[in-house]
Structures are given as structure tokens and as C-alpha cells.
Length: 128
Image 1: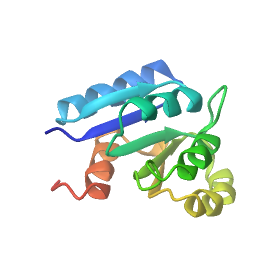
Image 2: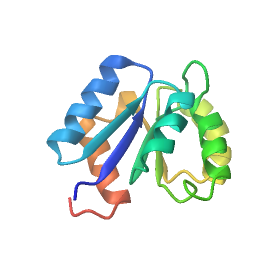
Image 3: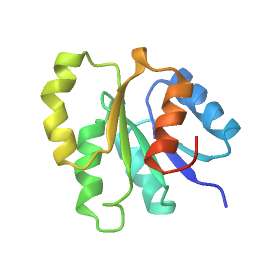
Image 4: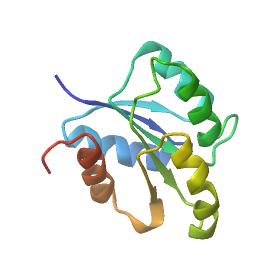
């Protein structure tokens, strides 16, 4: 049975790029463009891991994370934040993010899709 990844990303080009990379890597991929859509997807199917953008319209990634962590059913799903925020902004949000239960964060401009795939496999303890 394939591992399932939920990609919550409002940039359609990035969403498709990551989706394709994970599908080629043997994962089932679910997609959402906002935090609100991400929560709706969670109600239908529980993924093994969530890749979560921070800056999105409607409901941002940290707001989605807060809502998700309130529900016992979703609380233990690993989350990796993907962001284009500068490192100083990430440093400010990092303490909050880790307090909310993220497993890691990656700055999009500094990591290739292959890097992201490796990180996901590492978090899910899949041999790289």
C-alpha cells in the first residue's frame, strides 16, 4: 500500500511539481490550495504526512496546523512546513511551529524537489 502525502500549497506550479515528484517516488498524492481546503481533505482521507505552505489565502499554514492539532485524529500526522519566508521570519515562527508539532521546515528556494522527497522519506523512516 502506497504512503499518502497531502500537499497544501497555493502556487499551482509548485503544487504540480511536488505532486509529480512524489507520484514518481511511489506516493499517493492529495492536494489542497489553502489551509481550509487542507482541512477538508483531511476529513476525507488521512495522509501519512503533510507538506504545508505557510503563506496562503483563506487560512494560512500555521492556522491550519493549529486547527488540525485540536483534533485527536490528525494530531500525530507528521508535518513539514515548506515556505519562501526569509530565515529571520522562519526563526520567529520556528518556536511557534515546533510548539504546534511540526517535524521540520524547508525553505523552498534552498531545497530541490529531490531534497524535499528525501526529507519526507527520512521523516516517514523510509529507506532513502
